[in-house]
Image 1: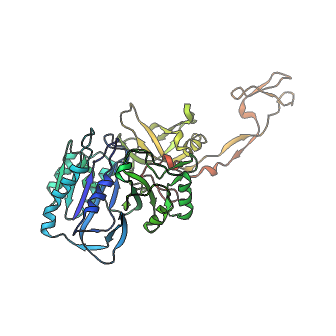
Image 2 (image 1 turned 120 degrees about the vertical axis):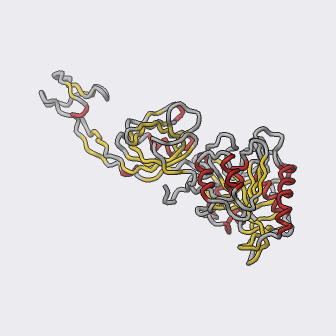
Image 3 (image 1 turned 90 degrees about the vertical axis):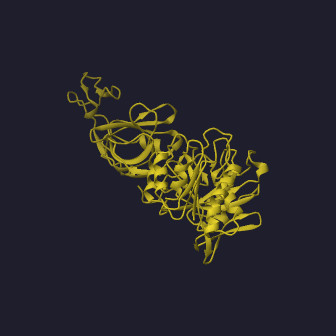
Length: 439
């Protein structure tokens, strides 16, 4: 039986991943089949918390050799590679069990909290996941899908918006995957400051190269811990789940009350669809190839605005300073350079602009570099500069010459070719990892 949960938290506290660990902690009889799943959805949805994550688990009666995927105090959480379905009595009891869990754990007192669960005997259609990670999905569309799914049961409170994420978590095909070990605090410490050493992130990265986004060397920020009053103490992301418990052992100080390893779609780039500047809906992310139209414009605060073109359509693309790497590359671009851009068209803006999440320079035209001053055609002497737009003026005979009269050479800019990603602290959860041949 597959269980999906969403929208039990708010910016003021709570955590849907913790709610799922409560379900796993209370399991008696049913087993966990495979890793529990943390599924990030469209990061641009305006009515969700920043991470926009839904949770899922496959429950049954396990068979095969189990693996350790978590710990609750002295009790080990095991996941089995396969399993038999729940009994009819266990399946009938599951909705009430989830209802009681949400009543006990959801942040009911906070506005905009719309908890939901979905139970299904099989995964839901993959198309729902791709819509939910790339678009805004109406609640009614999900209700119609569930109404047509034999054996599906669900419940949603408030606006019902949590139903979208709960259902989409059961539709994720888990092809491009990473893992995250989430460690949780004792309830008595929720909301109190976390005392973690930034050096721990560096140590984990050195000892376990399969982990990522532990520390940002450009901003010197530790990226393991959230900055909200939620139950999470830290999270360690990685490509190999076998390394994560060892990496967690390097974190000193506060001892977690529990930890669980999740299978995730983080760093997959699944939110990025092939787009065209002529038809790119607000609130969605995508990838497009375009040419630079004019010289980059440097804005206050270190941001850079690029004017780019696809066919006859021209838009502004912004490389924001917190990304660090993107403005540095954008400042070097010239009209005619060919790019592959990925980013987001934000909600609520007049006109059309893109917030860049990364870029690849496909081709950079050579740049003409002046190497000296020309000779005066009348007297043969070297003229003086009349300023960048003014060219040159001979002091001896007054002849003026344009800037193009100066000798020079064409210089290759091939060093710009390649992919530029934001610095780790400015990357979205779904942003593809550097080094992967994408996009």
